[in-house]
Figure 1 (cartoon, rainbow, N blue to C red):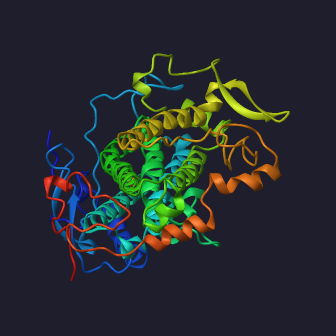
Figure 2 (figure 1 turned 45 degrees about the vertical axis):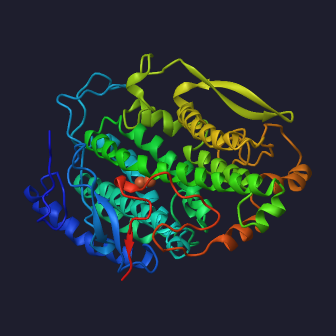
Figure 3 (figure 1 turned 180 degrees about the horizontal axis):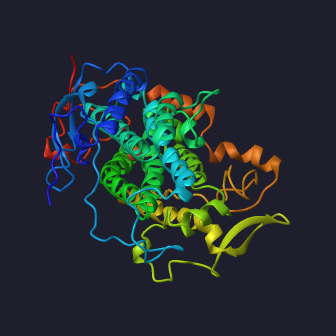
Length: 476
Ligand SMILES: [Fe+2]
Ligand SMILES: [Fe+2]
């Protein structure tokens, strides 16, 4: 089925916005505020560039990725939901077997609103975090990818604001405004989740962020795609198609950094970080420290390991598990248990807790499995270069700030250690001020088509089968 988007309208959409004047007016009222937020907080110094972007023109496989040069402020942010499933049934929790909700049941209103606002808040936050990166892009190709991620995060915000406006009345409209008022990293009005208040100061951080933190996005969206609230399920399903590209940018970005480092390692016949840094590439131990930081900060996003909210969200049918439909259990989970970790007598110990309360941990563990797969692909690049170094994820208790492990001092391999040992050894495990300064020093703007900064290898192919030296960005 093809649902095309009507581009003659102010707000491209496939939700028949024309038929709902009140909603249309509310969104048209929000639109200029969104655009002025984009002006203030969107990509720095890029307003006149023509960027080779994909824009969704329908949600089917042929139409959702239409490519062409667009000036970013003219990007057509729209509202697209995947087509509804006929007679969709709730398939987990206490309402299992009942018809999916086309409207918000009064008793779940507060929780659903909170879920949608929390998801919505991450979208503009990441645009804010990344807003200066365009000034130090390693190539046109990368600059284009950054802008693609940025405009799509903007569209994800639209997706959540549509739900707030359509289903939550005045409260929803107020939340829509507040989403444009909070600012990443701002002390008096920060973004809701901590990882979205951390700066993304350089391109290595950006690639790690899109690999790890956009993948958190994937898992949250997958859990919401199971929701009994059908409009939320349908909108998150479409967001997931866009999210895949964000993770690709991260995975291929880090892979290209590794590739370049390995080349120079072999040319100079040394793995001495000091010599590699002098040659202008990022040594593998530094990459591992960045990985440790982004991985640990991101797994905190799944929330406390034991959470009565998580149980409520599941049992009431608001948020499912990753791939709920593929699981072979009763999808109610009462009386089942799941292991979580805590520190006891200086050691990490597992304890079994009711599974419903451990659903954040379940989602975190699914996320960890998925993250590891890409790291193995990075290791293949190192292995192929004949270099005896392997990247790995840290133990999940390392550097945690949420849940029962928060504040525990745990090494990357899972040993509980003293404060003194942490102080002495953490510079080997997390990026130091010196590391960050070194990486920042490598960042410089490279914008000639087909040219790449010294610290990163070119991609294997271009975007949408265009050549690598294609003019992805036309500067005004
Ligand atoms: Fe997003
Ligand atoms: Fe994303």
